[in-house]
Every structure is written in C-alpha cells, then in structure tokens.
Length: 237
Image (cartoon, rainbow, N blue to C red):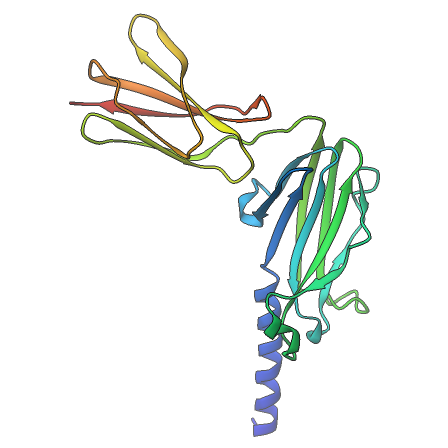
C-alpha cells in the first residue's frame, strides 16, 4: 500500500469511527412549568418515556456536521406533538468547540405535547442527500398522559449491619418523596406503610425478633404513587 493510500485509509477510518462514537450521545429533557428533568437514553426502560400533557420534550443529539452526517427526524408523532420553532438549533459544549474545525456540536429537537396518546420519534444519523448513508438510528417511544405515570424505583437492595437493615435504590425521574412499606410474618402476613423519606436510602432499626422481613418502596409525585418494588431480607442477630 502506498503512503498516499495509507493516509486516505486512516482518514476514512477516523471519520467513520468518530461518527459511530458521537451517535451514542443522547440527552432527553422534560420541561414543565416549574421543573426540568434531564435523562440519558440508558435511563429509559426499553427506550420508553412517559410525560404529562403540556410538557415540552427536548431530544439532544450529538453530531459532527463537518463529516456530512446529521440527525434526521422521521414522521410518527403528528397529532400528539408539534415541532417547536427552536427545533434544529446547534449548540456547543464549550466556547473552544465553536472555533475548532470538525468539533462536534449538539442538535436540539424540541416538541410540544398537545394531546394524550403514544408517539414514536425515529432519528437517523445520515447524510441528508444520500438515503443509503444511514450510520445509526435511535427510536424513542413516548406516552403522553393526563396525569404523571411514575416509574417504580430500580436496583432496590437490602443489607443487614449491626441490628439494622439498610435499603438503597435508584430513581432517575422527578419525585416528591418515597414511601417505605414493611411486612413481617407476625400473626397475619401484613404489609403496611412504614415510613417516608426524600432520600434514596432508608435505615430500619425497629426489630423485636429474628426472621424474614419484606420491604417495599414506591415513588410519590404530586399526590400520585408508583407501583411498589419489593425486596426480602433475613434478620439474624
């Protein structure tokens, strides 16, 4: 291979390798009257999202227009969402990027939710003039509801330490507080509300005997409560 051909080959690999890397970048913002929630694509369950009617949805995708590639939006959301005037704005991560040739930018797609229902946003990373140039795709399914559909907590775990149980969990959306439930096989196997916390952890030290205890954690927002996530732990003092 000649030196000239080798240089061309390296340039091609660099351009296409960078295209694959930046297409993984996706931020999602849900804008309500008094709050802004930012999520990553990995925070969604099966690329599905639920928002309340009237919210503004922003999908922010990283691209490098100097390669000729950009994000192109397909149809599939009409009647549920309208495109806002600020769709397609290019912003940069810092002032240095604005002066660097070939530096990536971020394309912002903004939508206003108009009605309840389900919509799909399909994006293709491609050269707009070449229908066969699609490099990567992203699909985001959005459900618009009249009231918030709260996701349950995830990664709930329980550990025992010095006569106490420690609960920890993850939650990526908006919330007011979390409700803790507890049940023990004393008499009937009752399961009752036990405590509330605004943190993603809880410590329980109120025990009179050994045995199995089951906990549940739910999310509360604007008076609405999510499904309960459960975990069991065996107490041995």
